[in-house]
Amino acid sequence: MTLAAVSGSLAAVGYGLAAIGPGIGVGIIFASYIQSTARQPESAGLTRTYMFLGFAVVEALALLGIAFGFVFGK
Amino acid sequence: MSGLVLAEVPFPPSVDDIFPPSLWESAPEWLTKFSLFLWLAVAVVLIYFLVSYRDPKIVPTKKQWLAESIYGFVREGVAKDVIGHEGLRFAPYLASLFCFILVGNIFSIVPLIQVSPNAHIAFPAVLALSTYGLYLYQGFKKHGFVGYLKHATVLPAPWFMQPLLLPIEALQAFILQPVTLALRLFANMFAGHMLLLVFTLGGFALLNAESLFLKPVALVSWAMTIALTFFELLIAALQAYVFTLLTANYLAGTLAEEH
Image 1 (cartoon, rainbow over the protein chains, first blue to last red):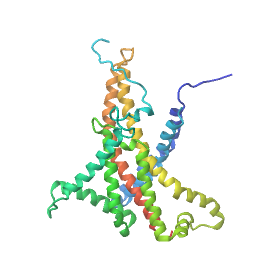
Image 2: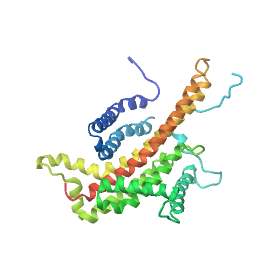
Image 3: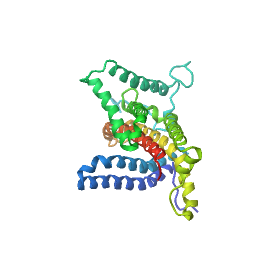
Image 4: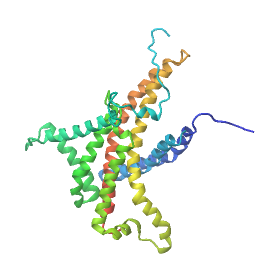
């Protein structure tokens, strides 16, 4: 007996789930950058590189989700 | 439905939209929009730097100033800051990488082109491979073959942690770094292209809808397209910067003396 059924591609739902973690992560990274800049404005240039590094690494997870959503979406 | 322009558009867009046919009927299979724009990107970067540096002045002209500040930005902001003083010899590679990716990415919002060559995995993959080759070569040159393998995989940690750490570090240095480098650029450009397609074609789909209340929503959809185009400009510049930054970061990790 089927209780519920979904038609169409589950990849869209899967990607939504996969984007939660990176979403939180990217938010934390930018929040921390703003906070550190507000506390110590002269460190803005120093920490900007690390912000983008961290952002790129975290964002990779969401992008893997997009890519695999299309690859295994059939 | 009279008076409305009804375009028959396929909706939703799919991956096939990103594989255009050859430029003309008898053209070879590889000669598509993408290879054409790839050459165009190379030509734009080459010609711009050649022209702006053909007759350098002590008081720079506008063209020369722009070219110098792009190079200066990569040299000071990426090569020197991330790798340190010995990173300056990589500044030309990093700067060409940055300019080429930037021009290629901006093609995704240039009218009539509207797709970036980097939206095909092949092009970012080659760029990532050249970075991979470069940092492997630099590592082997500096630490020796076994020395570099050790340098890349062995962390200063208690011995009982090593069985856990070794595979992770090896996977990270030799597989994940180049793969994510290529995938990040590709997925960003691909997703951006899809996003613009969804909202543009979605506008037509709404316009063609049966319900009268859905038709005006098409305007919202097209307004979103315009907003997202500006967002794409931001992403294009950011991804070019991130690619260059990560390349410099991997080189820095390879060239570091000890942990």
